[in-house]
Each structure stands twice: as structure tokens, then as C-alpha cells.
Length: 91
Length: 168
Image (cartoon, rainbow over all chains, first blue to last red; front, side, top):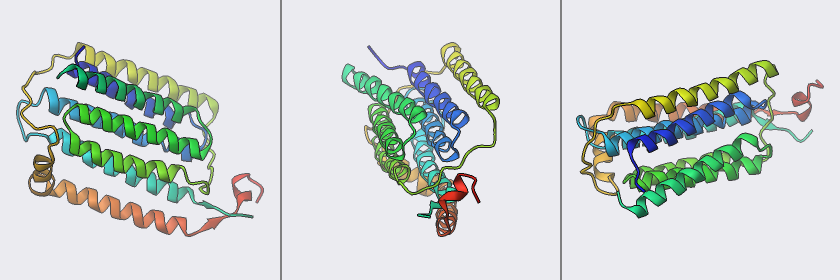
């Protein structure tokens, strides 16, 4: 049993499609928002996989850097979305 | 890649996928937080097994933050205006996206390279973030700042529960 770029890309495809499904399927917008970090996670897995198995030119570990930036962007998007959804009052 | 890393990769990928499915079909806020925590653990495991230890730590922290935000009990439920037909079309589109990406991954002719980085990679990622791609880092920093300010400003206004239920 070994891991290749194809298996990494399959995982990335699954996570990206799952995030798109969550964003499209959920009726509640604050729940649909949770699809965004899942899609970003799929993109990050693809970048890290390419950096691990197929990076023949360019800066080393560029995929790791993009994965880090995507994770930070996912946290920002989730925070902004929850903030825009707003706080529910007690009345 | 040895068998131990391969097992770690597949187990972590399964954990992330299970967390994503749980996130797709759960309704309670706390369970959404738990599901996002599962995704965080799975993602960190996948990254660690792919020799991206630094990215794994950052992803674990960021997605744990997402999980804590989603687990809050006091944010509103905002109903979509789109009808069921559009939601079903979106779900079919997501399935088509999965098929297209899986086909591209299966049929692609990828280059093979020997990985020379270490298991953690913090030094190279730091050089990239703060020297080679400093502009991208600053752009993401600006994005984080705008998101935090916007979220704080929007969060200050408390909305009554009746507004959610359409009884104004």
C-alpha cells in the first residue's frame, strides 16, 4: 500500500466536491457557509500533494505555503460569515 | 513513502471525509463544531503524512478556530431564498464536479519528482512566506484584518429571534 499523487488528488477531489455539495444543499446560509472551509481543504490537499510528488521546478514547498494561506483564508471567511449572520437576541 | 505514512494518510483522509459528511447532514451548532474538528484532525493527519508538518499545525489551529466559531450557540439561522429545485441542481453540480476532478486525477499524466524537503518544512515555508511571496502574505493579512473588522462590526448588532422566523 502506497500513496501516489493520484490518490492524493482523489482525496482532494472528494473534499472539494463535498464542500460544494454542502454549500449548495444546506438551506441555512450559516450552515452552507461551512462548505467553504471544506472546499479550501480540498484545494490545500491538492497543493501539498503536488509539492510532495510532482514539484520539478519553481520554489520548493510552494504547495505547503499555499495550503497555509488557504487555511488562514478559510478561518477568515468563516469568521466573517458568522459575524454577518449575526447574533441572535434573547427576545 | 513507507507503509506507516500511507496508513496515516488513508486513515486521516477517511476521518476528514467522515467529518465532511457529518457536517453536511447535521443541524445542531455543536455538532457542526465537532464535524469541523474531525475535518481539522483529518487534514492535519493528511498534511503530516505528506511531510508538511508546519502546514499541518497551521491547518489544525485554523480549522479548530473554525470549529469553535461554528459551535457557538448564539448565531442566527438565515434561510436561503433559493428553492428546492436549485438546491438539487447544485447537489447534482457538486456530483458532476467530483466526477470531473476524479477523471482528471485518474487520466492525468503527472510529472514525478523526488521530494527533498524534510518532514516539517518550516524553514522553507517561512522563507517563501516572508521573502519570496511576501506580497501574498500581506494580501492574506489584509484579508484577515478586513474579515475580523467586518465580523466584529456586524456582530455588535443584536437581532431579535422573531426576525429569523419572519414574524416582524
